Image (cartoon, rainbow, N blue to C red; front, side, top):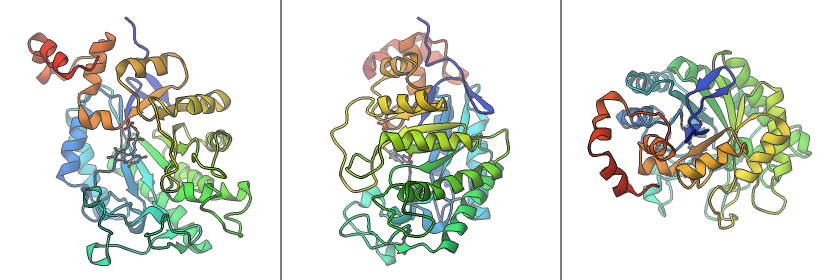
Length: 371
Ligand SMILES: Cc1cc2nc3c(=O)[nH]c(=O)nc-3n(C[C@H](O)[C@H](O)[C@H](O)COP(=O)(O)O)c2cc1C
């Protein structure tokens, strides 16, 4: 059986060896933004996973742009050095052709959140809470402190911080940068009419709401050398009336492409609390396919991709170029090897692990029941 999922894909200047990406996932294990030993072992697992690409978690371009006190940042020399150490470790034994990316983010009004394992307990100043910022002073939810409205000067500083973080990410050794313009974080807050009620040049009309996302894209592109791939995660719908729609996603993707962005990853939701319908397998695929069809940009999608055969179907249909999986790789960091086995693709585990194929492999496979 020939597998499309296991064919290479060109993303701007880089080639990934297959179309499986590990989706960015916050790990809440950084120290003042700096990657810890946790990140080293986490990245090393992903480098050997069989995925062609892993994109590291939402990384704050400023200290107050981090989602939680444990999130990665790229705002200091220490942050850059710590990430470079983790990248170098992962590169040492990664699989042939494996590429590593990082997601650059400012969380805006959704910053200063508690660790998920402390859920329920608010992040207090004693535990490191800080004043959040946003396009408009509208809190994310009832019990959440209101953000401070950004001034024009603040906005320009954040654009510059994205560019500076991009340079640091390149110095740290990443192959690909992903601007986080989805999931209700700052860039999305500027884009969505639900969260941007400004009356200056950064809000109001659709064109003005796009100004910040596109200013960030331009600044990051200018700061990123041409051998590094640049993409953005975007929302294909806010799932609520008066929020962003699939038409907005097509427009944003086209504008990003015109500014030299190489790919988009199409996701959805999270601009307001709740508001998501029940979501089934591949819930973003159709809207992502429309983005690809109408803009021609390299397109990835994400969201409840239900196993190797489903991933293969999505890619082989031509709907999108690449799929990303998040929780599946937390559950099974060798998901790529197992998908190759299911799809009959010639991908071998690293040499140190290949004896599993000669002996325990069928039993291991059955016990996981992943087919
Ligand atoms: C623990 C965890 C952390 C996440 N952190 C991020 C993140 O940093 N950036 C992001 O864009 N999405 C993040 N997500 C969302 C995932 O990237 C993905 O879009 C979502 O989980 C749906 O994919 P899945 O069904 O394969 O898990 C996170 C998801 C999980 C489970």
